[in-house]
Length: 214
Image (cartoon, rainbow, N blue to C red; front, side, top):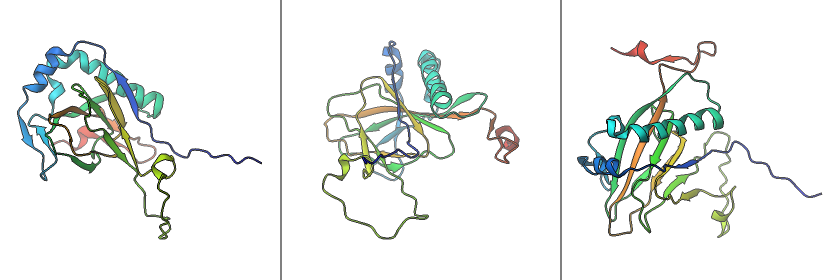
């Protein structure tokens, strides 16, 4: 009999494209004061970490939130009352700069908006997060073409297109390889979180955010 292979617990990467005019938004993004990211070599990050709070982003924000809500409800099937933006920031990668593999703690959903895509820009790299619990300490060597097969891949690269907005769960490990061009690689990061309450009382998982505010 022919064997069957099933996917277990796939992780979604949501991609949508904004079709509105962002001319004024880009001017606003490019006016942001930039600081070196902590750790060195990881590029520049905007001093303002709530960039989309500015009214010039209102139309773009409607698009972002509709995407977040579709991802949370239709794809992830989260139970929640309302989502809101957490932090949002501009990132610049000068030639030779990169961003190490990382996750986004203390938030629920991570988004990236590619508002200035140029040829040969570095792709975003998603890394496989392998838990040590219950895993064999025997590590087999892999065939040379292992990256071409979905169950042996350790890294997956996504090359964005102009005005792509991508969303993924905040726990997914991702990074940016070195910028091999002679120009600045630009993007906007946007986090989203449930408003007011996360989890629920019945399962003893409830967080009421206002309860812990000073």
